[in-house]
Image (cartoon, rainbow, N blue to C red; front, side):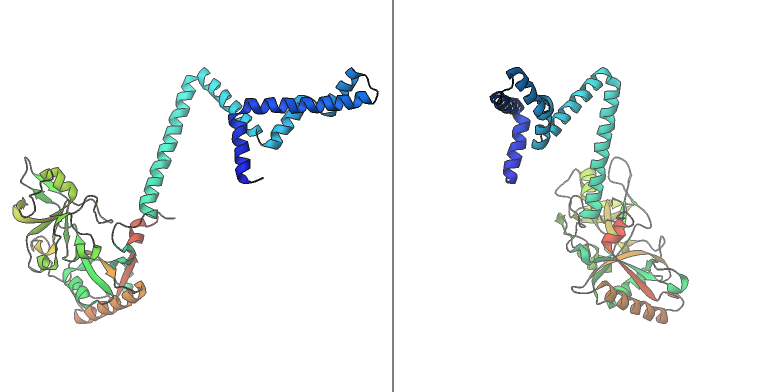
Length: 351
């Protein structure tokens, strides 16, 4: 018997139970009658012959149960009986029924939510082109037991210019703090990220409209800004003519050069409203050109075909060279730590 025949038989047992039972009754009756006739032909009284035939089969109902078990239909009856019993019990105790339904709903909801998190964090790749090449980058100081320290802007600039095993390094920081938008009905603090000119290029995500920040914005200290999709909708109602206009942030005029697509966000940080070049940070807030001031995080994209170990070795060589050149400012910074960006997002969640 093929699996199709088995499935068809199981479905018939479930959906045509009455017909199957009638066929089973007819079949058993036929066997009892045949057994009875055979005993009568042997000279036995008909009544006694029928009784002996019934005993031979061990009772009609018991035989029917054995046949149902052999055919695989018994479990259907058990499920139906269990459901009926459960329904009667719930009707008798509506409070328990409501509690059971609530627990069931909470269980299904929490399981669904958990799978959503697992799917988004562990199963789905990061929403960037070739995310396996993206890595977080830290300077390291083995002599002080520090494998992850921050960059100063001069150090980051030197690493970016000298590195060949990474196809671009990008720096970012949420310091010195959020800008306040002054163009609305009331001042509103915006989540602000100061980024290097290669930030969006390294991630590989183009803007929804306009352009993203570029190296020339960083180099020229240009007062340019890129808005997130959410801030564009919330503050400007999705005004399509916003790109190219100037808005006031912390009493400073910034030109809106682009809008990022809906859902875009750097995975390690909080939701960001506005991105601006890190070189527009006022020196009174953070003396960015002072090599000892370490406040920047960084990530990079490995060059095609480059292993993370190869890039780590090259960046460590750059770090040691800078320590020799600037022994007072870069003392102990002699190595680099690189971790796939996905791993820094997932962290210990995978286990």
